[in-house]
Amino acid sequence: MTTPPMLRQLRHDVWATEKLIDHCRSLTDAQLDLTAPGTYGTVRRTLAHIVGGDTLYLALIGFPVVDPSFDEDRLMSLDEISAVLRKVRAGVERVFAVKEFEPDRVMLDDRTDPPEELEAWTMLAQFAHHGSDHRAHIGTILGAHGVKTPGLDVWAYGWKIGAIRVKR
Amino acid sequence: MDYLHRQMRHDIWANEKLVARCRGLTDAQLDLTVPGTYGTIRNTLAHIVASEEGYLVRLRGKVLHEKPFRADHPATLDEVATHLGHVGDAVEQLFSSPPDPELILADTPLRPPSAPRFEMAAWAPASQFVHHGTDHRTHINTILGAHGLETVDLQIWPYAMELGASREVK
Image 1 (cartoon, rainbow over the protein chains, first blue to last red):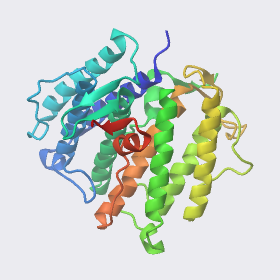
Image 2: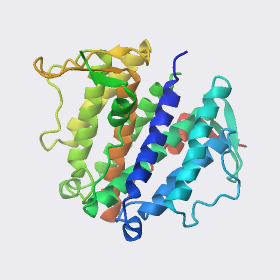
Image 3: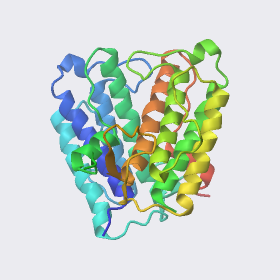
C-alpha cells in the first residue's frame, strides 16, 4: 500500500517542527524570547502556537490529542511543547491508520457564530500551511538576530528518509 | 480530487492574491526587505515562481518553455504574473493524468549533463512546491507588516471560503 501524499506532507511538517524545537534547545531563555517586526511573536510563543494549531486541526477532524483545556497561550517550556508535538505525531498517524481518510467529508466547526461546515481536507491542508508559515517566522527572527537556522524544507526531509538520493 | 492538486491550486491562488496586493505598492516598496527574510519583495516573488516552474519541470520531465525563468534580475510584476500563468497551466496538465506519488523521477532535464544526478520520489518535489511557496510568501507578509503595510490573509480558510469548501451554516 502506498503512503498517501497527505500523510507524507504532515510527516514532513511534524519532522520540521521537531527539528526546529531541537535547534531551539541550544538557545538561551533570552533568545527564546526574541522576536522581529512582522512576525507572530517570540520564538517560544510561536512554537507553542504551531503545536496548538496542530492539535486544533486534528480535533476538528475528530482526532483530539490533548485535553480541551489545553492552552497554548500559557508560557510553555520546550519540553512541554515537545511533549504535545509527540501527541500530534501519534495523532497524525492515527488519522491514516484507522481507515482511508475521506478528504471530502464535511465537518462542523461550532467554535464560530454562526458555525461553519468545512471539508476535511481543508483542515489538513491548513495544518501544513500553518506550520510552514510560522516556522518561517521563527527563521526570520533567528536570522535577524544573527542566529543560525536549520534546513526545514522537503529536500532536507527527503534526504533524511532516503526519498532523495544520488543516482548511481 | 488529488490532495496535492488541491494544495497546488491553493498555492497558485495565494501567489495571485499576493501579486495583486503588490500591484498597489510603489517600486520603492517592492524593493523593501527586512533582515532574516529571503530578500526584497520583488525578488522573493520571482524566486517563488521560478522555483515552482523548476519543480514542475522535474515532475513532468520536460521544460515548460524554451528559456527557463530565473530570478536573477529585478523582475516586473507582469513578468511574475506571466510565469505564474505557466505554473497554473502546468499544474492542470500534470493532474489531467495524476502522477504516481511514489514514482522515482530521474533528475531534472535542466541539470547540466556533467553535474551529479539525483533521483527522488515524485511526492518530494510536489510537497516542496507547496512548502516553499508558503515559506516565502510568509517572508513577504513579514516585510509588509514590518513596514506598516497591509498584509494578505493567504491561509487555507479564505481559499476554502472562495471555493465553497467552507461555508457558514444557515
